[in-house]
Length: 354
Image 1 (tube, one colour):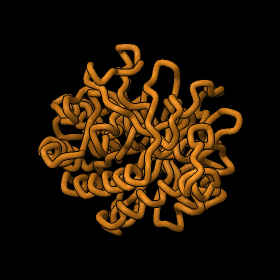
Image 2: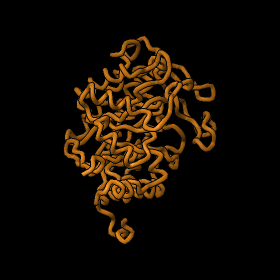
Image 3: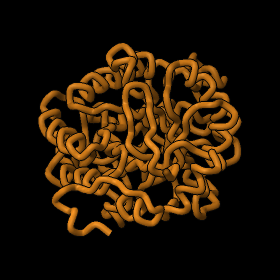
């Protein structure tokens, strides 16, 4: 059997293959509610054979959104549609996951097709928060530095959202600690200029993430997977780097995290990224080899052979795909054909089998 179609067991959950649909914001919600767009978008990728689908960055509070049109899980009313979605995904033999997120200083901004930039409070925006009062860029809102009360609210919001995620039918939680959003903002010295116990030293800068994890673990069953997405490097001088990422992951493994979703960048608008096929793989590979934790790799992975080679070389344990899954919702079925694997197809589609 190919490595790409070898099941992956994480605690009580068996993922039928190593292909995961990466969280990809759809900016198609009103007041945080999922819609038929989300059902069809995520459901079609379950029909297409992905092993795990992680829903887009889902805000743990209204002020945790990136844009006014982000998906949310800050109130009970959000659960009805999410339950329909997780039920459909599960019925296809795919594991439903959710990424819990807080946008921090990158919140209250326009959807991408409207040019990003800040949304004023008059236009439906909100006051954004961050570890320090430093804006992401000139056209982004100036955040308010969180005080101790605000930090405790963040932890509580993540914890409550995790309980809702369980009731919504999700079997995997991923904490979003990457791409310049709130958790990442605390990790990086470029955005965290605090002088209290949440800033300065490495131990202080990782404190919020560890407290969020501890909060979630009070409501999330021990036998269900808990993942963290990190940006392994800020790609900017003086920023968060791979050495700190390895150091962090050693600690996260001890704290019970099951897999690290390894991405990079997003915190500094002046970042200098060298982009190419699987350009983030070296980060995942080093983290895996130095810590022994399961890792997922993401970034310009577009073919079955490329994905299979990554797994054969033991550089990662999971292939997390984003844009290619937008282009090809049925990529896993095509990949199985290319790798000469026989996988189950939806009975409704059997007559189209290769």
